[in-house]
Length: 178
Image 1 (cartoon, rainbow, N blue to C red):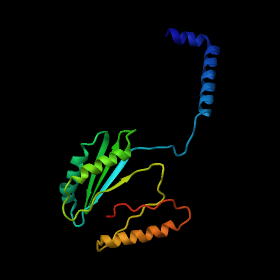
Image 2: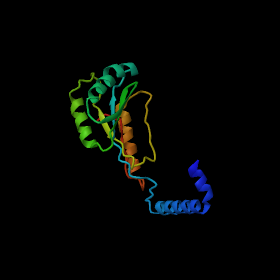
Image 3: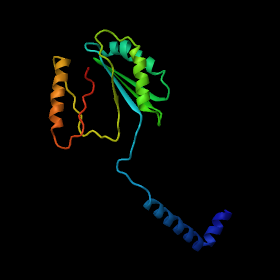
Image 4: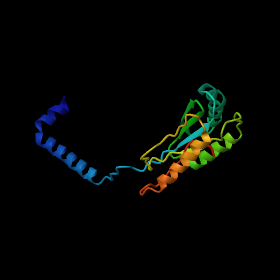
């Protein structure tokens, strides 16, 4: 109560303080750097494993859980999310900010080379996420007959077409076996 009474009795002092704070705020925001797309080097890693002909349940039991168990031993993992689909397992890993993503990927690759995956399973495919390189378009290819080799050939042909388009910086084929 005492402070409020003093403020009410001194309106010029209160107005002066408010004006000074506003001017300092305006000067402060005027000198701040503004970026539409700030540099965000978030350490994310994606791992995809194709297992043609397997149901989501089989993928979960024989691939996803085995990979996840080995990946969890890596340090500095903030979140680890596993998705099991028909024919594929996808794992996304977010590391603590400041982690060296190349070292973490190398560490995970070494651990997963020791894992025995079921026959018919393709080798894991690793991909990092660069938030500074925003994708303009994402495409998914599917064939009714499930011919993965033909899907890969189609994807490679499409990628060559996109490289010929002016302004295209990068075309990435993700999820295809080597």
